[in-house]
Length: 248
Image (cartoon, rainbow, N blue to C red):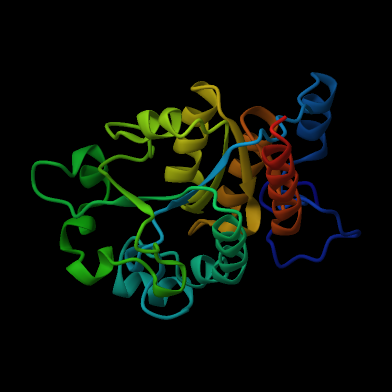
């Protein structure tokens, strides 16, 4: 059960609350616990939501098994990405209702001069059509919401995101989108390094690899962010809103 190679289809002897349960070996869990990697960042009173790369290139046009989805777009995560949509709809609605900023860092169309080393690793990104860069309709930006094109994994690298967050007095980032092991993790690490509190609602992030998804969520939770389910994220957002209303 505790082998890193356990499949997600194996039924664990008992159910727990973390997406990495049954993936991270007990010895590793014990080592992190013994070292005291169990703190919580919590939230401030001025949160913002990052919605990273919610584009058809990461989803495909419709929910499909992964290998079928990859045949449409090599960067697609197929049904794993689509499984996030109902949770994202709830979270987006709560942020909009509370009038907190919602920001959409997204992959800019790639040209021969800006694909970078990722283009070397995944040459197929050069063949993605224009439709692939459109936002998925169910979780697309509202007219006034900020859209930030990016050319690298982190939403911060080479963009004006940090300046915007400082200007808006943001102290907490809820980070969603894909992929968990790529753009989400890179953005979470940068956000933490810049001093922001970070919350990752694990039902609102996705990856093409379920193992990578689980391991990276575990690592982010132990080092850089509070990884929680969507219900918990919504409760944290309500707490932040209450603090903001009281001006604490």
